[in-house]
Amino acid sequence: MTPFKSVIILGFGDIGQRVAGLWLGQAIPVYGLARSPDKQSGITCLGIKPIRADLDMPASLKDLPVEDALLYWFVPPPRTGETDPRMQNLLHALENQAKPRRIIAISTTGVYGDQRGALVSEQTPPNPQVDRARRRLDMEARLQNWGVAHDVPVIILRVGGIYGPDRLPLQRIRDGVPVLREELAPKTNRIHADDLARVCVAAAHQPQESRTYNVSDGQEANMTEYFFTLADFFGLPRPPAVDWPEAERTLSSGMLSYLRESRRMDTSRMQQELGVKLLYPTLLDGLRAMAGAKE
Image (cartoon, rainbow, N blue to C red; front, side):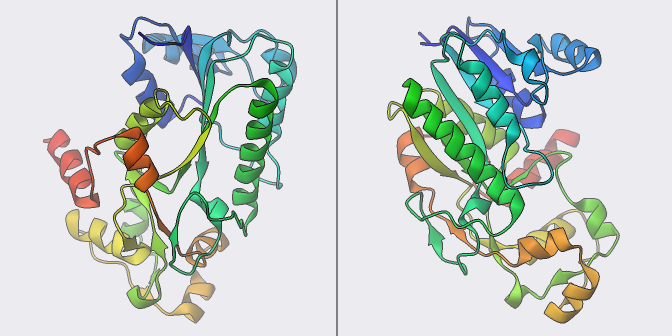
């Protein structure tokens, strides 16, 4: 018997749709936020109840059906700045409404910054070094402080890279965009989109109430190994590997910022407390499943 009156998903993209699919049939309504009539129609076709609202327009958020709900936050922050005004808008709107039973938010392992390949646990102090990570940490802090003030449990899922169908950089590989030489490449972390969705559902049932979890498949790899594995699996030429001076001349500033951060995720808390048995514990497991689905 679920303790939630409903499930509300804010940020109804790929992960939101996967999570909604896991909750359908659980005898409680599932809602998805829709900013436009087209989005509202698409949500309805999936069997989800649409909520017409826009997180950039605070006035549209005043009547959200959040009482005793499980509220998911999958909303990307704005592209610029160091804060997340969308979370601020939501929390301001919730001040004068009945409160949700629990809030689960996806954040990023980028809040830890560069750890020089060290193993990072949830106790590692955040040290964001780029604005996109600072925006996520701002979201976390706002939400956690609000949860404490209003006695609403908040669960933060710090997620590394997400891969899955239509989430692979195959065109980048086809275009021959260079990668760092493997011995220079940073440690990275990723998880299959289906496994992330299952973690999101498991987090709704864990008894620890407010909690932060590192989320990845736990496989240790580096970014160049990731690109090489994809190229080999799909029969594409491996991208050229270059040293740092050449990378700084040819790669985008966004990619360079990722390459300057290296860390490994300790996921023992996720494994022990959420009890999720991953469908795809390795990248190759996930790729084989995707290839099989297309046959």
